[in-house]
Image 1 (cartoon, rainbow, N blue to C red):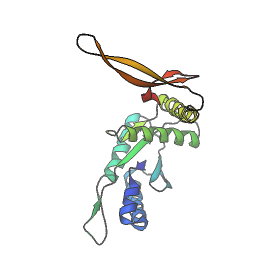
Image 2: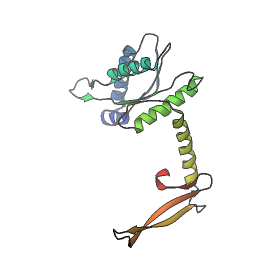
Image 3: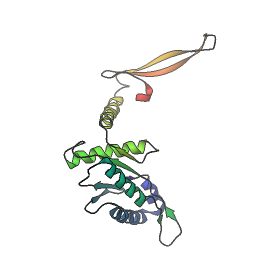
Image 4: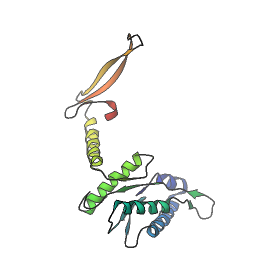
Length: 190
């Protein structure tokens, strides 16, 4: 679980207040999860919840709802009438389906959490294999794009613009990346 845009709380109220809010959030989360659940602060505004003895996905979903109910009420700042809302994103991975050790499960849950952040209307997501594949592809493209200009892999192509009578009235200039392994990539891919 990651508190979205928590840096704004630190920037506006200071790290001391931000730390106090995170401590209060941790207490709320501890009360929200079943007895025996492990709750870890991974640093700053990121938490890990380790659930044991889960039989069905619906059990996970119910606990997510309890966690959301814990962080959704605003935090009232002491000595003022100011309130702080803490929207969060939650990623879920399941043993043994998504991994056999804590490191792998945490990495998978992190990918799912980032997917939930990217889907602005969703605040939780389960790990799916395509998240890992997409993440690896994005990392590879990021590494490749640094050298693309030196290797002259970027091509400029022209597409005619037609009017209703199918007459050429202009051209549209488009970039294409002739990637050596992935073939022709459109700009939305890089």
